[in-house]
Length: 220
Image (cartoon, rainbow, N blue to C red; front, side):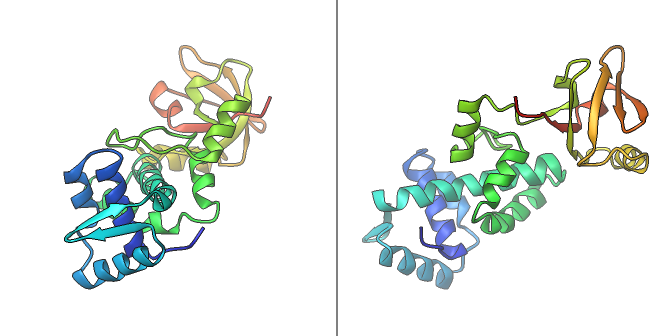
């Protein structure tokens, strides 16, 4: 598949939202930051690839461009999830950073991010995230993916995938004690508090903090 420019990706994203999701307003917002020159260069690029068709003042998404448009929307919404759920960058700043980061999610990086996020089906705004091959394979295999500590049962083990960042001080405390991504973890009990073991040390956390410790379950 051809690697296209960020400007062309923004236009494809707009056309997918308008054509497939029927959201004309959302489609106008998605490429509003393109200058007239950038937009024209993107249009010319997409016409050359036969991804879009120009009729008068309107652009139309051709069937040849639907696959790339779908993946462009997928990358943007995964980037939103990463920024807002994992990095805790929300609001306008989160949207802006997602717009920048989405253009870097190529050549399997989107698959790694999707797996890290446990194959989300919607973006933070409730819009659907088009599934990738990794999502379909995970469903077929019944792969457990990455889940919050609260979804483990007593006696279950896994690897710490990442620590969410909504409470920086608590996360720093956990990390200073050796609760780090990549460490093996065993849940000892889940009530009244979550007690887990990492290495030779045991830790107790409340429900709120347990939900921010994400575990990669082993494949069965």
